Length: 114
Length: 112
Image 1 (cartoon, rainbow over the protein chains, first blue to last red):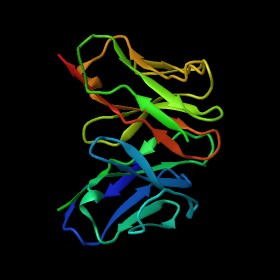
Image 2: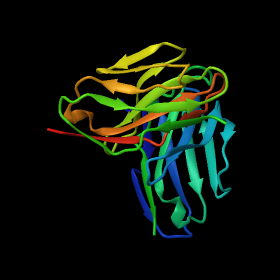
Image 3: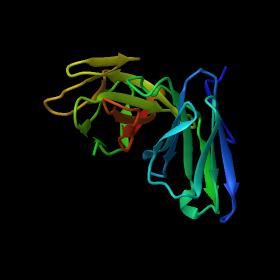
């Protein structure tokens, strides 16, 4: 019944490793997002996909690569992890890109880079 | 560009106290405004919204009024409960597109 799910919930890894976070939504939405929340709770959009097409790509290091195999999934792959990548990453979804508010966030993935 | 400024936290209140969390924004055009709540260990949930000037959003006893003249969307609740302890985010969405701009979040702790 979970609307937006993410795996894993916690991820602890060493600097320099490559890792992926997966996101799935079962709401039939056509737009999905990745947000990063830093230690001060500040949320910033990273990417957005609409029907598998990239529509928002903020100034994010190219070590971060989103992949949307279908409109229900948006995965985030991170290469060569750095200490500053430690944060909580939230996936979200919405229907359309117009006036629909962003009502559905996943529970977050807490990434810790050692 | 767009920006949202919230009052600094943390805010600590006793149960049944009155709550105000200030939010002001800078945007071009006529954005939609939102309040989100993040309970400990969970993702964000949409709490309430307002899409045009003078609209009042309300939910679970919380209210906020879209004030264009003061570019504000302050969150209020008449009597808070311990279960309201969470981080509250003000956000705006531009008139076209899907980009949400969040404020920095305000931690609220309600003590019994």
